[in-house]
Amino acid sequence: MKRFSKSLIAFLAVIIASASLYALSVGQSVSNVTIRDANDNPATIPDLGAKVLTIFYNDAEAADISDPMSDALKAKNYPETKTRGIGIANLKDSVAPNWVIRKIVQSKIKKYNSTILTDVDLTLAKSWGLGYCNNKSICIIIGKDSKVKYIKYMDKNNPPSQADIDYVVKLVGDLIK
Image (cartoon, rainbow, N blue to C red; front, side, top):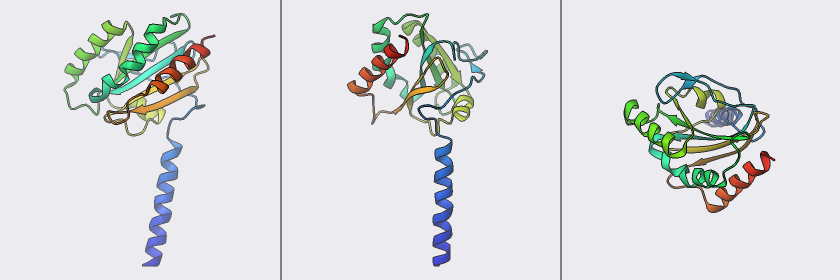
């Protein structure tokens, strides 16, 4: 029994250590991947490596959680030549049909005048090591060097605080100077 317990503990330690290796973290470089646009055409993340990007990777059930952060950034009117906001809808984990999510995405494109892409099969989530994304809204800030400067996982029980919003607004402002 002791031998089994030690083996189980060792196995779990390896699994936990391996999982942390794949988690996206501050300082990590990201590369572009092909996902889909709001009309289901192939698309890549625009301006990756050229502008400061604020990406909101949202599960459909958690899409509105990041709105206060998006609204605060939009209110700053940062120059479009230096920064860009992008939404990415996680379609794989959604219970709603993709066409319904695409309609919601198209209305958000009009509201925020920004790019919103879709991740139909978790291509970006897997490539970037986002881990478990179901019912999550993930804010990722990427510098012009394609390195992650900030990442925050949010959900209905952990929405962005005012301190989170203030930090993101200041960080983007500092990065575009």
